[in-house]
Image (cartoon, rainbow, N blue to C red):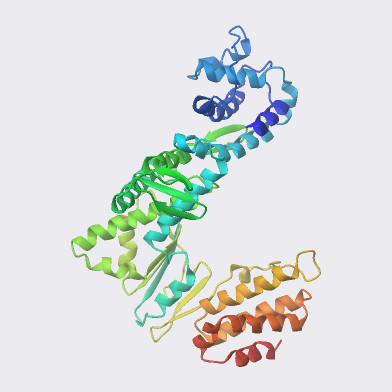
Length: 449
């Protein structure tokens, strides 16, 4: 609060500008944040409003309380208009940045009002992530998708890969709240509790609200926080401040989780309703994967699945197919292909491979970045490659590309070879997957470098 008041003090004034609609928008944006804090905590001392102050003539027509006007009057008096005008865009950015820090705490319970703003922001994200894991822990782990695809053996299989182009722009807020509130009620009811406790990265239920460790939230607190996030998303464009009234706000810490859970509830409700009546297509959805707004489906009934999505998802959502061939697709960092025998072949997909220019992805050996960071990155890349590549030749090709790149940015060959060998030794699953000893794999990797 002290920080935002200091910035406003430097840049903000309403002197000689009572007719500016843009000014009113900015005062409204700032005061809605500060005013709610005042009502909750009495943060600022009372300031007597000078009723004869002409600067507030137009503003006072808006439905704000006298208390709010008092505070705004204390903020803007005695500051120069010219300074504020020169930094108008900067002020809007300052207000919006502070909003993301402040808004989540406003709808919290009284018990949480003494906590820090960032703690509450982290708590809602941690809670939503825990709910995602309860629904499906595999949807954001590509290597688990690879494991399920390895069981496919059907030459009639086709792939449908698409993304939701309107999820963050067109989905009504009422639909988002309806789905999330339904999920909250279901999870809390099944747990026999109405409270959760968030402590660091851990979330657990608290039936009696008796925990003294961590921060406690009632299920209605979560609903209020989600509602506040949806209702308080603004964009500054063309000299005007706009409020987003459709779509899931982008840029908020909790936005990916809100989007993910909203779609998950739609899928859950559709499957539950159709399995109950014995719909045969419902059982073919076990090879459908989704990461937030990216969707992947493979079966011999892919065409029927496409028609099914119109019933599964809200009519405001538009699915745009991203694969041009029915037997090939790129899903996240995974390239998938159906072979003529009906098996699934997977390999690593990197969109930068298609670029016409080179991309700097790893730190140079002679840079100021510690060497260990580059080598640890190479270790992680090799692990990712073996998880994604079903063919040893694809694995070999990708690991060689990584090794060549690090050598090209001046990493000594001895260090690169040593890290490749240590990575293979620390991950015995590589040897088990491809049926070769680590020494043989390492020899083949380094043979043509």
